[in-house]
Length: 299
Image (tube, rainbow, N blue to C red; front, side):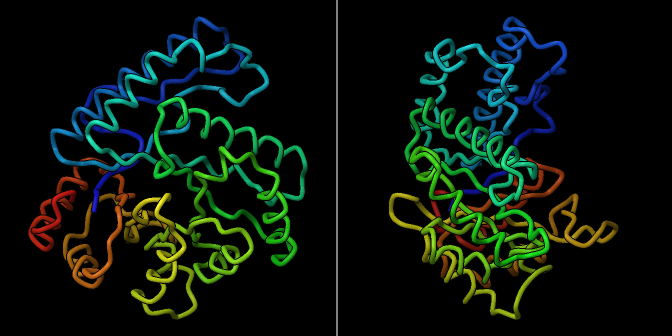
C-alpha cells in the first residue's frame, strides 16, 4: 500500500501548477511556467520520498494550455530531457503517479465540441505520462459525466466515445464512482461494456450508494484491475461537517481512518487522501498505517 495526496504541497513554498491568462499566451511564458512547474514537482517528490509518501497526483496544469488550440509550441520535444529525468526519478523511488482532469472533461456530453475538447485533454494527459516513460500503472482518473435527462442514453454515449479513444488514453484511463449520478454499481455496469478499471471513492460511496457492504463493493471494483493496471487505487476522504453533502473535510479524522483501515485490512490498495491539509494529513495517515499494517513496507 502506497499513501499520498493530490497536486500541491502546502509547506514546500512553490506550486507545480503555475499558469497564466490565455490572453497573455506566448511561447516564452509557456516555457517559463513549465520550467517552474517541473522544478516544483521535483521538489515535492523529493519531500515525498523522504517522508515515504509514494503516491502522488500530478495536477493537470503542469503544462498550461496543452490541449488548447492556442498552444502550437512543441512542449513535448522541448522538455524531453527534463521529462525523462523526472520519470527516472519516479521509477527509481517506486512512486505511483496519477492525474485527474477537472469536471469539465466530459466524454458523455451531448455537445460534440465538449466531447472533442475532452478527448484532446485526455490525450494531453496520456502524452505527459508517456513522456515520463511511466508504465500503465500511472493512471488518469475520470468521472462518467452527466445524465442530461436520460441516464441510459448518457451511459451509451460514454461507451461510444470511449471506443473512439486512442490506445494511449485507454491503457491509462480509470473511472471513479461519483457522488451525484453514477454510483459504484453504475460504474460496474459500465465496466462490463468497456473494461475500464474502476477507482473507488470512499466519500462518494457514502453519499451515493445502493446499500452495499463496503468490503463487497470494494472487492468488486478491485477485480476490474488487471496486472498491467497495478494495485487498485482509491480516493479516501470524509465529509466536511460544515460543508455541502460530499464536500471533503479539511483534516484527517484519525478514528474514522483507523476504522477504515481495520475494516479493509485484507484488501491491498494505494490510497489517495483527498483532504484539504494535503501532506499534513498524509503524514498522519502514514503513522496510523505503520501501526495497523506494520508489515506493509510500501505504506
